[in-house]
Image 1: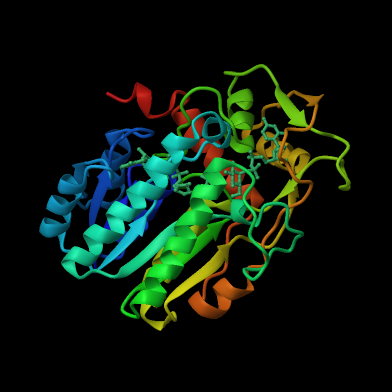
Image 2: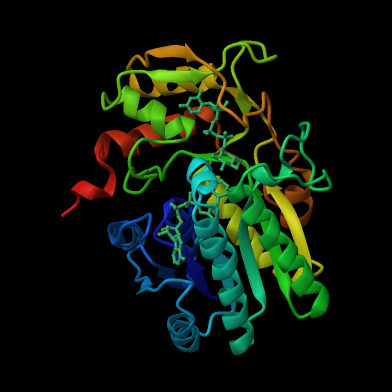
Length: 338
Ligand code: NAD
Ligand code: UFG
C-alpha cells in the first residue's frame, strides 16, 4: 500500500515507518522537523534496507502539502504530526491550535483533493480528562489543557467529516503512555531539553545526565502512593497503526479506539524496571503532585482486539530494556549523529 505518514521523523512515526517498510508498504513522510531530526529516517532506512520518500514540509504550507500529495498519491494517511507538550500548550495555546487543528484541516482538505479518504489519527488518552479507569471509548470526553483540547477538537472534526461523506474511513487512535524503543537501539524517543514525561526522565537519571527523579506525589490512593499509568511499548503501538490501516474499510465511518495494555504500572514500578534493565540505581525524591495529574489511568483495550485484532504483546521489562539500549547507545539522542 502507498502510505503517507505525517510526523514520520518523530518518535512514534519513525517506529511505525519501520513496521510499514518491513512489510513492503511504500512510505512517504512529511515532517517539518520542528521536534525531530532527519537522522531518525536515515536509521529507519538502515534498519529496513528500504527507502523513505521524505519531504520537509509544514502542514501549514498548503501548496507544499498539495505538491507532495499529488506526487505520492497515497491510499491511506497516518497523521502523527503535531505539537505535544502539555505545559507549553498552556503557555502558547494559539500555536497549538494553529499547528494541530489548522494543520489537520489542511491535511484532510489536501487528501480530499486527490480523492484519498482513509485516515489514521494520533489521538490521546488525554481526551478522557479525569475519567475513571478502566477507560472505555464511550467514556465522556473532557480535556483539561490546550494540547488535549486540540486532540478533542480534531476528533470532532473527523466525526463531522465522516458523517458528511461516507467515503471517509477514519480511525482515531487514543494512545495511553507510549514508551520504549526499537529493539535494535537505533531509534527511540529524543526529547529536546528537560524531559516532561516519566520514562525519558528516568532514563536520563540512569545514564547520569540528571541527578535524580522527582516523583510527583507519593500520597496518591494507590498501593505504593505513586501515580499509575498504562505504559505501552512503542513497537506494539506502531503495529496498532498497521492493524488500523488494514481495517479501515471495515470500520464504519469514524471510530475512536484505545491503544493500551489495560495494565497499570506505578512510577516506582517503572523506576524498578529501569534499574533491572540498566543495572544502575535511579535516585528519586518525593515531590509535590503535578497540577492536572490523576492518580490512576489505564485503558480498556477490548475494542482494539475486537475491531483490529490487536493486543499489546510486550511487557514492562521489554519496554525498559529496549529504552535503555537506545539511551545508552545514544545518550544525546540523534544530535550526536554525524
Ligand atoms: P514527536 O514530536 O516525536 O513527533 C511529531 C512529529 O511531527 C515531529 O517529527 C515534528 O517535527 C512533526 N511536526 C509537528 N508539527 C508539524 C507540522 N506543522 N508540519 C509537519 N510536521 C510537524 O511526537 P510523538 O511522540 O511521536 O507523537 C506523535 C503523535 O502522537 C502526536 O500527534 C502526539 O500528540 C500523539 N501522542 C503522543 C503521545 C506520547 O506520549 N508520545 C501520547 C498520545 C498521543
Ligand atoms: N511523573 C513523575 N515525575 C516526572 C514525570 C512524571 O513522577 O518527572 C509521574 C506523573 O506524575 C505520572 C506518571 O509519572 O504519575 C506519568 O507521567 P507522564 O508525564 O509520563 O505521563 P502522563 O500520563 O501524565 O501524560 C502523558 C502525556 C500526555 C498524554 C497522556 C495520555 O504527557 O500528553 O500521557 O496519553 F495525554
